[in-house]
Amino acid sequence: MITELHISDFIPKPTDIIWDVRDAKSYQEGHIEHAKNQPLDTLNTELLANTDGTIYVLCGGGTKASKAVALLNELDPSREIVHLIGGTRGAKSAGMTIMGENQ
Image (tube, rainbow, N blue to C red; front, side, top):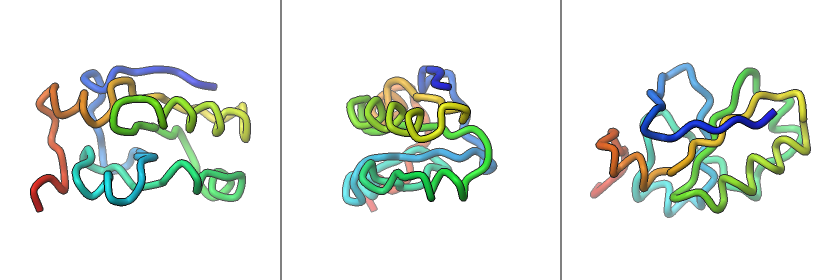
């Protein structure tokens, strides 16, 4: 089941499963706190089977995340998947902590 949440309404916690579906280079250039790099091409049934709970998905602005949430929903329609609308760029604009920037 896919739901949407604007990134500015999201407070990431260490216990959240947050997947940034961009490539490794883009992820390293800046990502929200507690996000794990999980590129779009790595999403599969096995990965979902080894992950419990709600999955929060974002990318830089929304294109890859839209594809990712659709794929995850297709792989497991019973899983709660939250599309973080606005992505990393929206998080930065909202003043959220961005990790990896300028490092």
